[in-house]
Length: 281
Image 1: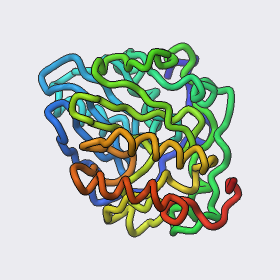
Image 2: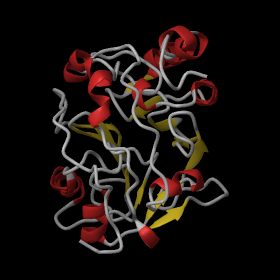
Image 3: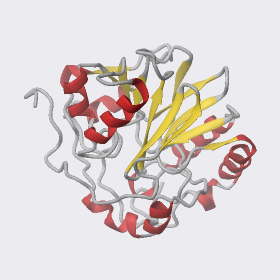
Image 4: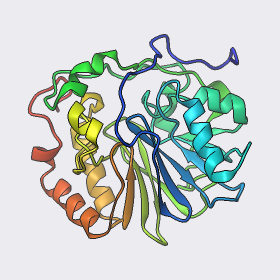
């Protein structure tokens, strides 16, 4: 491993999975969602093309699964133009170093997320006191130390464009993390959400395992700013997306998405915000 880049000392395999792990879903000809244990990655680009991007980098020790998914869709020895991150939590950057070393591609993230990706700052510790289920209770074992990508990671362009994703623009959707972003394409109203909202009750082990679909706010045990999270949900609902790939849970589209996202925004306090927790505003 390149000595200039490294994971935090608490980096480790997390023994959690779901029935959709290893399953890929094509939402649009150039938009593919693939589940790695309990989190989704996105491949943006048409099969057979060299012009594609990987959004997020899965769980710790998942590089082989991600490489396999990429090669199954784009061909043997294919590699993306870039890796673009919605944010830097362990389950979204878990394989990024192995992938960067294999592919030699740049990584992009929001400016406010860079301290967590360059070894400068740890995320706040997960909060196991939020209600919701066993995943919340086991959250203290989740890594929260920063990874160090050195000069491999670059700030997303300030004009809102996304390298390698010419029709998408990035949208700052903080709350879950300070520099969390989502990606939106006006032409077909396609939305890559990250964890600004999810479509599974991520705190519940049973619902994570079964992937029972229900719209929810960002994972409670790692969210530190609930007022910002609510504003971010409002911002995304106002886009009227036609299809949404979330960081956790099955993709949602059409009237089901519109109805549920509207409900989330209107009832955010009761649906998303925990009654108790150390990061309550």
